[in-house]
Length: 114
Length: 116
Image (cartoon, rainbow over all chains, first blue to last red; front, side, top):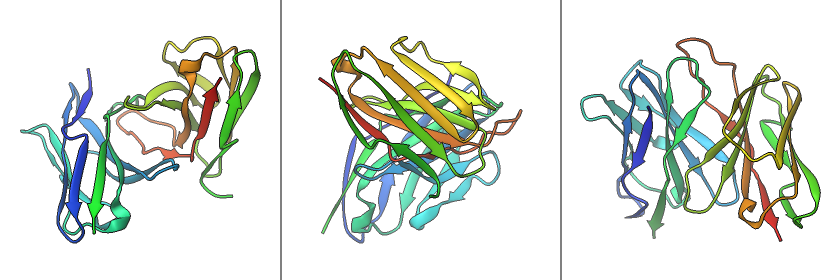
């Protein structure tokens, strides 16, 4: 069975400093992994996805994530936080065999301090 | 309109009312989803339609009734809801999945539902 754990429910960083949002997954199959962002009163927006190609995935707005199979991790990073990055971030895993089931993490709320 | 739209954006209903949520996607996708987002809980998949056929139904109470008349439209019919059904209901769409391929989802802004 698939599962995903976001290790921090809240993360605070200062503007201009690096961002690290942690995600660990469990999957019996070769997984597809996604990161989404949700700003207040908005739907979820795709940041990036991993589907068994390059292990370092670049996404929108300067975010990237690295798939590490040995550590079963897919952490999201950004070199320099911007005030507009303040939002909730969701790590998602889906079994890579045509299933429509996406397993969502509980979310990490990112706060960016001026 | 572009992307995935949902109406209404906010809905307040009594427990004896009947209402419907509407979702429309303008992306040419052929799979559509309903999710429930409650505070402090992971997103819960409710229903999935692929090519207008329901392919997933996650033990959702019968007071929620989905309808997918075509690949661009998805409805969620609501009746005799409970206060614990108050949540943000999100619609999403994606390409139809094929073996070995999983596609990203595109989400609408959601309908904030309050049951009184």
